[in-house]
Length: 160
Image: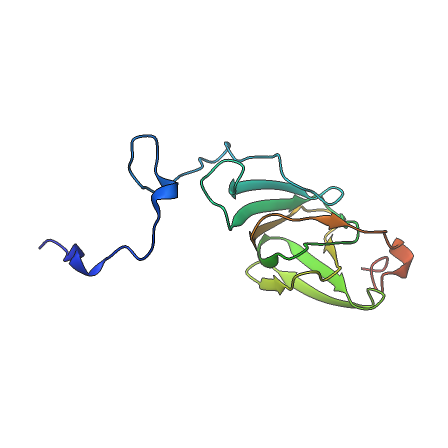
């Protein structure tokens, strides 16, 4: 039995996403072909799978972020971007607050939302294994690095 496609109607103009052939179609970024030319925050390796750099996307950045064992980012925020994260593997911590005195810990399978303009520090809690996040931002991968905070000023970081 053929599906009834008449109920799927185009809402709005998506012509800007046409391929050279004229067809509007999903755009696939193959594993290993991700774009590494994206903003970083001191050692967080970010690659984009869906972004303005190599797809027709104009209001979405979706990528993978890896952190080496024991890594912590420099203090930063993501400007106007809303950020969603998913811990694919490893154990993570995000410091935030007035003097970065607060933090949340996450592990594989946890999701996080980071509000726009919120200064924070991302950390890999594990001293032996990498941390991998899947991250999405709207409208783009904005990274604004700020003056950094010494390790000893981060509660429970040195004793983790």
